[in-house]
Image 1 (cartoon, helix red, strand yellow):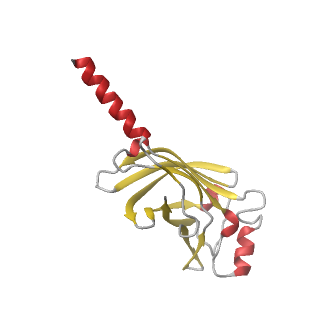
Image 2 (tube, rainbow, N blue to C red):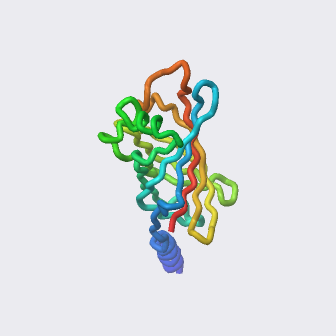
Image 3 (spheres, rainbow, N blue to C red):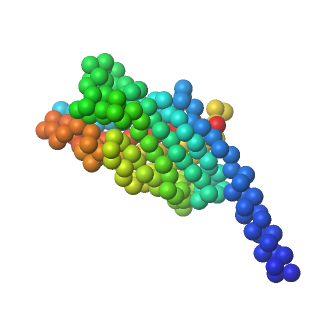
Length: 179
């Protein structure tokens, strides 16, 4: 009897893992927004062109997986001259490093309903570092909305050089619709 119960629980556990649906970011409505201080004023921009795979069930976050890339060419700060400079070797060097990648290593619940933490490797240019991104998941008519915010030090990713006028800390807001 104990063995039968154990086998049944094991089967239900595996069924939950395999029931998770693989989704993709909807590039047309998903955004990665960033802000940074420049001359003491917050300026910002967006990346788009998200691609990849997201497997996530809020009831089984540990079984989830995320591997998403961002097209670095899509940087948009509403200033063509600045965008061209950010794409150059001085900053993102997009011809050599065309994508930015976030690949999960672990996903866990944060303790509050609907709140999770994505532990991932963030790769920008030739640097990959471990990060933690607190995020929420909301069901919308367009799909699942993943929203989260985190900060990085741009110098640790070889994005630009130390500057008296530009801050090192970049704040990043993710709003990714997946289906």
